[in-house]
Length: 613
Image (cartoon, rainbow, N blue to C red; front, side, top):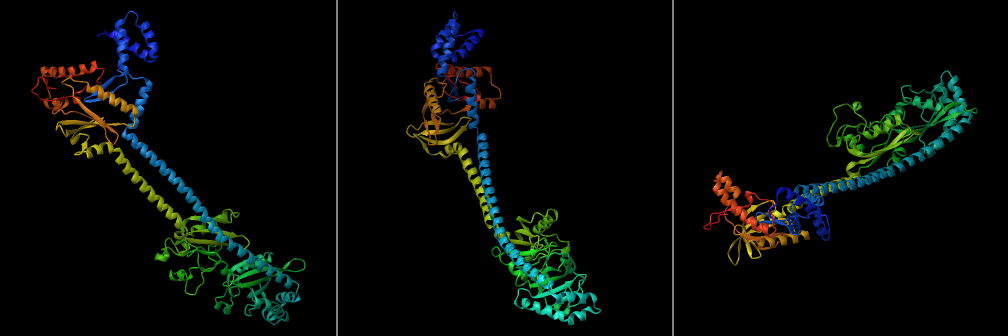
């Protein structure tokens, strides 16, 4: 049936409108729209019939189509979505997104675990530091009370007032104080507490900075050395404060040569002595042995094999004895027999001195360690902040990487630091970090390898089948590969007939695809024209991919022929096109529409028959 262009356009419009109606309503609709135009109605009905079972084929491969004209919007969207999902690049994007999501979730879990570990480490540091601070507070409080008790007892003693008068009025106060009866009375009064403990020495200084009573004869009657820090301590006591000096070398305040020969280190507890009116008339200082008291407190809490707790002052000096005193001598920070208290500055050397590193700059030019610097800065800018942590590894005064916590005692004017080697404290964290990194690398590697194997399965599996059987056919070699499948040369095991096997790339997991494929193969197998390839058989591989066996056509494609010949005589072109049209005409009669007619999809061969295509 042949329609003019205007009638064909009308038939196309009516066809699209009829598609939207229920099949029962189409007859009434067509009678109204095509009244008096039976040819148009017949064309529309033919198109509607073809729409129900319309097929096209590409080369020798049949392919179902939705309609002969433009698809509807919903069908187009579904087709585009399916095409995007089946695109290999899109699959890689999805894979990458999944890998990144899993990596993000793994990192999130790791960060939470890391935060929990950091909280656990900080809590452990606090649990070590807190008992030390509490013990120091109790110990100092008890000795402050003892010192104040003695200060009150001396204030009521007439012998003390007598010594003060001798210091002020005598022409030779040193001799007068040494020989005064009141001196022996005060010494006998203090003797029991010096013998039974906890104090080892005492000193009483008046408001002229003169030593008016002590248990050491050389310094008795002498005035304080103004070049020492003791002057500042005494001034605070004269102003009514109780004062604690955590570490002091005996004899330095009065330049006592006998005491300075002995490396006796003490802690001083000072209290003001007041008269009846409350005026400070003198100060009392009581000393305790640091090695038996002060230093012992810092050994109460330590972390593992490398942990250390020590005291420090606002000058950045270590106040207590280091756990690593022998090591400090070996690396040159201390001399043999020298105490680390007041002799070690908590500076960052810039490298691990225990492994041979030596700083090029002198010690006074080196910066404080990160924890000490943080503590001193905090005390200077915000005195209300009295504790803190540094949980990222930093170098200590030896250059060893550690983590630590600090706490400041305002009344005693000293700080306490607890540190531990980072390798020991963060062992669990580092193990988790390494395990996380290993798992991520392993996961990405396995996923990438599995994905590559999966995405290439369709291409690799058929190639791997070469030499093996597919039903009654044995694959010999690969002939070509196109957008929808791969073609292999095969041989029938019993008939010994060469056969072309086409393995499609479409997935059989879709029931609609399976039904459509079967319908296409059955319809195409009905084609008998001598210029149409014959279909022998079809089936499905274990990989859920369709295949079908068809006539093997030796020769070359028309595209290759044109490439070789460059130019064909018109008579030969007509001869070939007549054969193409003959094949297509038979397909059209069966409702099959070829929608990819091109030279690449037709093969030419030289035969003894009249037909050459």
